Amino acid sequence: MTGAAAAAAESPSFAVLLVCTANICRSPAAEALLRAELAAADDVEVASAGLTARVGSAIAPEMANALAVPVTGFQARQVTSEVVGGADLVLTMTREQRAALVALVPAAVRRTFTLKEFAALVALAAGRARVSGASTRQRLSSATAEAPRFRSARVAGAEDDIADPYGGRPADYSRAAGEIEQAVAALVSAVGPS
Image 1 (spheres, rainbow, N blue to C red):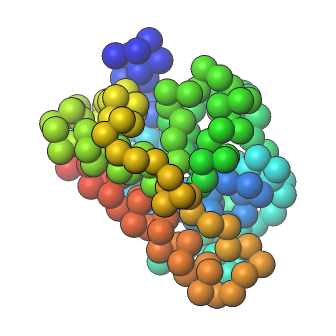
Image 2: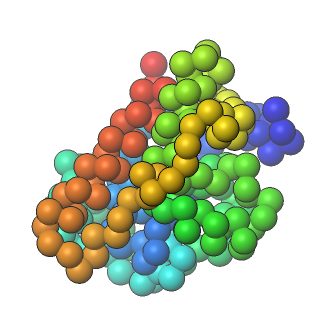
């Protein structure tokens, strides 16, 4: 286990940061869905931010309407090196966003993934009994430490990206929400509350 992973395993909580461009569509949707799925886990904190955030804005109404969970009181915020540095796991919506975050905080490279990539890597790790722990926090910490080891076991590509629906048709928002929901469900099935 790396020093950061060991520290996360000992911490009383585990911080997950979800990132997209403006922090008004995909990342707040992922935040709301992951928070709802992990509601029973009081040792996990879920937040989101944007690379070029529309700071203070609410989630786009079209995205809120596409979600199966309510989003209340959300306000977009800007990604900073401090925000990334304070997260135990950083999940982006695209490979390009992942690259931008790693360029901003190079030390975050082993704990930064696209959401879909991480869900797939955790499924591989869990399938080989490499995700362990008594709590959701411990299982997330274990999964974050193990996921990089499985990168060579799958082909990364465009399917790891979730397209930005902003300004698109209702079907675009539904498609993005569905992809986020599937990735969150796969992730939670491997690390979520028992």
